[in-house]
Length: 409
Image 1 (tube, rainbow, N blue to C red):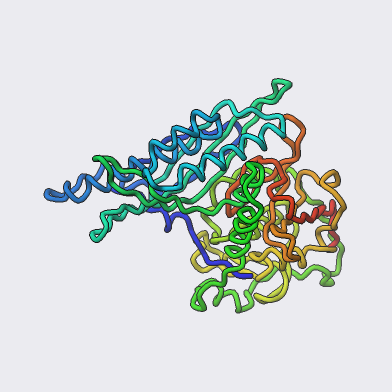
Image 2: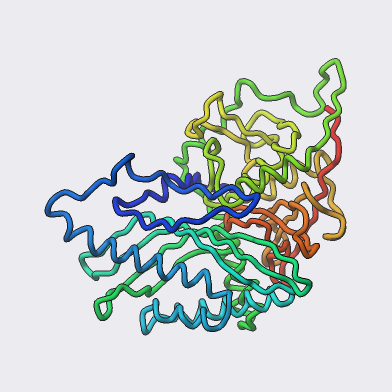
């Protein structure tokens, strides 16, 4: 199970005319990092004669931002969900699809006793292209939304999501309208199920999640090729005789702090991947203090920065980035399988088999409980901050991995 390197700073390059919507960070949550602004100091102005080319792209970007903001607020209620249709192309099924997902989100929140009271949304626009053949605009964007909710006892909390979108817009009546919105969210199957969608639609959405996770990269992926070589300064393999015994204690607070800091952003000193959940879990385990081990791409669990802060030359083992391999490397060394969610907490891990077909597809990090006492996780791929742990459908299998309190080196 390999994943393509996918640094977000390279994927989302801001336009000359940026349309990023500011988001004030929630208390205790680092503001999500986006791509660097274009240049420094005064804005860069287009050259003479370029305005005709820039203006349609800017208008398309503005329309994309407006749509994504309305979409984020559709969880507030039916009125907000219905408002999405004004941003969508008339004959596109997009508005109906998003309205169904919003119904699912509200029903799941109600099941947890939550009422969403406010939504803040930051949209970072990436590339904007306009087809000369069709006139359609394609806009890439990264969206980070923070939802604040209150439960029936008046307790309040915040949870967040980060998601990449590829939007297709068409001009109609002098306006840009969204005709299609391509994204992959690991919550889609669960939202469809909660909204009462047909079982076939739920299964198809879950199948798409598994396809994304198991997609193989091109053979020329530089990091994968580099990782085949054993690093020169690998930490001692667990169990190696050192002439003394070291007893390490897993720092659950440090693991949680790292997960919270980078849940909705990515550590710029590390390689990130198109399916980043296992990589993020490995970073969290390492932040908790447990040592890496092994020496080749196919053995052990390790990541080597080669003494630099740039991830361009980093190497890693298969178990660092692949869910099933990671679970196998940690099991009975750093983690133990326990029977239920009641047996895990801050600093532990949950593995997900989306369709129940026997292959583990996803991993999330438990970071404790929300203000209502419900277990919550942070995760990557679909980026999650403090969301309820049960991400799957009725078909999903879960494995609960309790991190051992101590480890003898």
